[in-house]
Image (cartoon, rainbow, N blue to C red):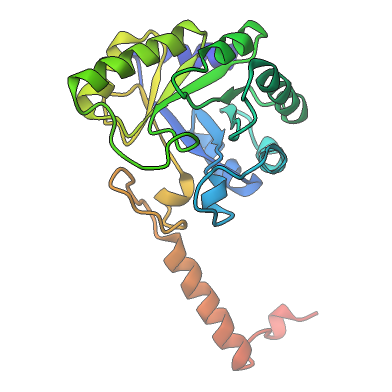
Length: 256
């Protein structure tokens, strides 16, 4: 697949730009600038106000992916397999085929539990591109912490990443991994690493779009806020409310 090959060819050449999208409108902007657009299960928190990503289901993911599909042109289009949809290789294959058939996405992302390498292998053998994910994996870890802070954990993560690469993944997300460990993993892999809270030493970066535009209200250390959309929307709605109450809207030019 051309788009997968393009991502692979970018390692050690230029940084890979990735963001999440859950809608038609946001995708129309992201597709101009991103190499990868991910329909992330983070929509559970961002759009549905859930405390974690554990209860979002595949059909909800599908509906958002169908919206994203309408505006994807340039970017590699990846969908998160939500929790519970890849318990076995057979279940993973069935659900991946379902998402690809319905949305035309280019591949799926799977979080590692340090055991499911056979699932990645099964999917890639069936010609389904897989993006791996190690470090802080929200589907499997309840408590947030930085990973790879000591030598023992560093070696463990490098081995885990290599196993994911050997299983056939085309890239791997490193979430909240220490700078030294992220650098070591990136150096040891032939496939690109995509960092989130894992330093500049990764081959690319991914963040939740709603976080960087100030819409989600989530402000961890690893997120840089580029815009305060929440503030702008608040000002617009406040003005609209005032205009309606003071009978300034609709004016003659807004009336048929």
